[in-house]
Length: 288
Image (cartoon, rainbow, N blue to C red; front, side, top):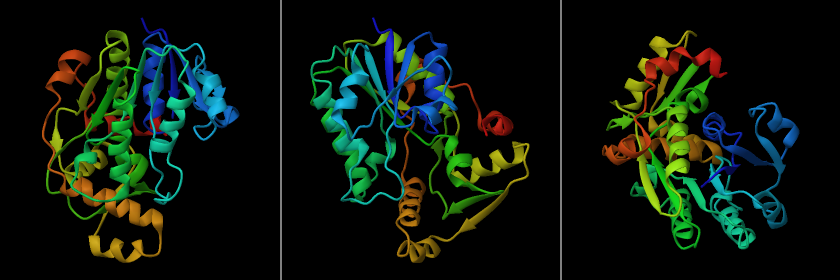
């Protein structure tokens, strides 16, 4: 039975809602953070903070001591380069080395459906290698493959009072709120222990990025404009900035990935999402 969970990546846009849901579900939640003072301002007061870094194996050893399971919310930052240390791969390698003698019952890892987009971009290859790494370990795992999170709209694309859209999406995406996803993670920790599991994470309604953005802006209490830019414009800027190139390549993948609906099993075992884009947009002021 899983009672205590260490969250790595708890303060991120997606990690924070999951951490909150784990607390609500009654788990003893710890968070490994680099800066406990800053993390304490963000995380629920029930969360125990453990100072650590995936670059430093000694801190990982201390963090996993005595916990039953680990939840990973890792990502590649837009400014990262291929040759650098990546928490999503080298960080995971350090974790498994450091947790060799820990008594972990489960690891849950957030991946992405976009990892299957046909691209030789190194970011997607890191995600694919991370999955191979997790599957080759002895600790039982659950891997989640989400569609697009609603948080992408206001936390990634919103700059000032404008939503910045690159190109046009060709196919619908099944948008889901991180809060709904967090409830699915909590349920998985409750019912899945020694078995290995993989789940797709999708919402009910399939919408293109433009359709989703229009729904968000029309229901958001704040006045928000939409600005659409052609792909070629950001291709030119991408030569000047690693971060802009990252945003361009992610946008191109989102725009051109033909997503299937594959979440029947997820809903059956872990619960159906409840939050619509309209409801998410209406709570915009509360989420800031």
